[in-house]
Length: 110
Image 1 (cartoon, rainbow, N blue to C red):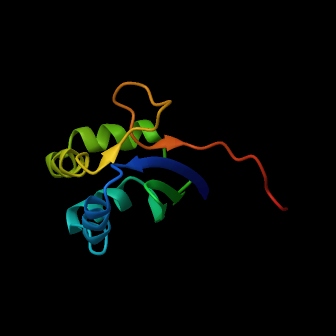
Image 2: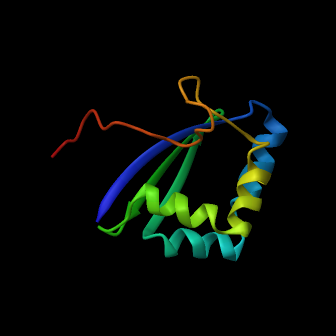
Image 3: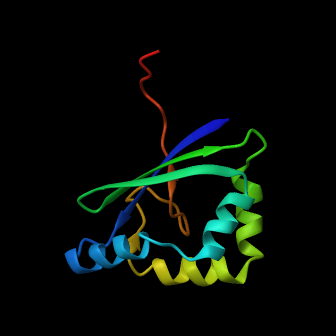
């Protein structure tokens, strides 16, 4: 098992943030399926103000490149990503087209 932590910002608008959270109370089944099919076994998203923090646990064979290729070939995922982008905004240090950014672990108790 692997674990990844990622960050992304939301548009800083209370109404839009509430809508975004409501969308994630019950995501579309085809989106959940695409996440699981890519080798992600667990995913949680947390929020403070307009900053999102995602924790993903994956199977050992998971790769972001494979997931990106699967997503690019899936019209439902592309539709979802385009739809939710109106709520999201890239972190200040993001490169063009970059959304969720991988975080570096700086501490572990054990």
